[in-house]
Amino acid sequence: MRDEDDTDGASGPTAAAAGGDGGQFELREHTADVAVAATADTLGGVFAAVADGLTAAMCEEVPADGERFPMRVRAESPEAALFDYLDECIYERDVRLVLPTDHRASVGRVDGEWVVEASARGVPLADVVARDVKAVTYSEMALEETADGGWRAYVVFDV
Image (tube, rainbow, N blue to C red; front, top):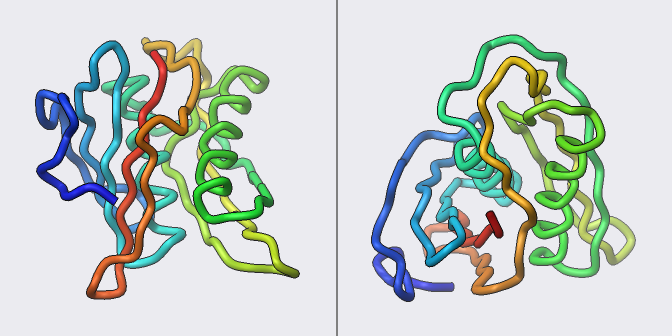
């Protein structure tokens, strides 16, 4: 995992906010892409905070309406679970035509796999002005437990 000040060419934070599941995130400029650096007390909290950062990368003002919907992913590692969860958020946006926001997530191991049980509130895309985020990438992705038992993550999105 990178130090919070190590941005590998990024020009610094462009926005910071508290995530809906107790975590915090910062949007960071990243060449032609956008990156999210997030922290939280729990693994599920940092997943939700990165997803909240994804939402913020797509839309500056999010209306309060929208119905909650569930998401569930399984993967072989925590990093793969984070990638698949964020990819599922983008997929849900494209299929449901909603902006996933107000993310909640729990992450655990079940039968040797990492399972993410999550939900988001889906705001109709017709109600927002949203920037297109094309994909989550493994480029520079980092996920680690901190010395105090919390979690931090860094994820780059293709825009």
